[in-house]
Image 1 (cartoon, one colour):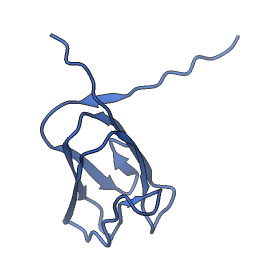
Image 2 (cartoon, rainbow, N blue to C red; image 1 turned 30 degrees about the vertical axis):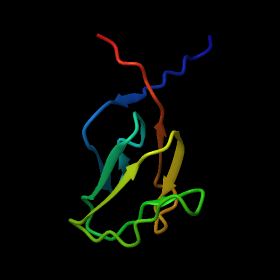
Image 3 (tube, helix red, strand yellow; image 1 turned 120 degrees about the vertical axis):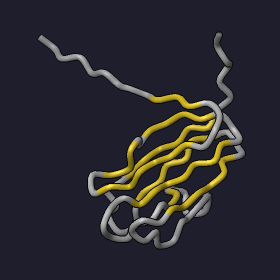
Length: 103
């Protein structure tokens, strides 16, 4: 008997989106937003991390020390992968698209 794979995708519309950086990774690590959207990463770990776009140029936080934040305003539709230069297994993805509002 085959198993079933279930995917959960969080969709956020309006306001700032907060992402925590912890020892376990980015939380949440896969989101869909409507442009323009400000995303704020909060380093909740006890060591420095980075938020670096996988394309090498869209955004790069530099060092985010413990307790510090980094923010980026996403203005264009697209899929933005990112990772931590110190721990490359820590990865996330932000999808920016126009999502029709529902009542």
